[in-house]
Image (tube, rainbow, N blue to C red; front, side, top):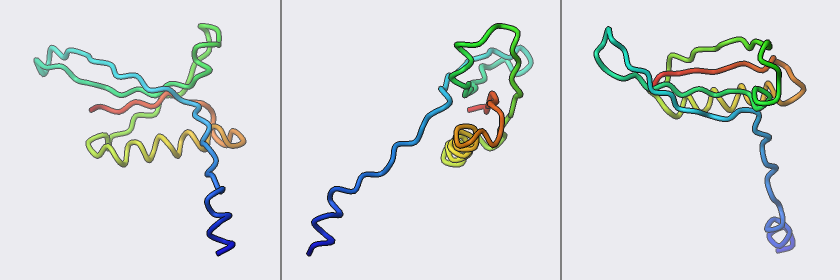
Length: 94
């Protein structure tokens, strides 16, 4: 009974988001169709000078939205938690 009473007060820690998502639509002359891309950019992108460059990671499993979000969460964790990897731009086609 005591455990159940205190378990109500437990709250999970919120994850620190280091990336923001944007959706880009590009028309392809070759395919005669539009291609949508989901691009996750580091939040520091907006605060750095124009000469800073970021590595680009292209995820090819965007057809499975769950996997894509899972990979983005992992990249977010590795970038934010002790900077185990550098900030990168992540892209995947919808």
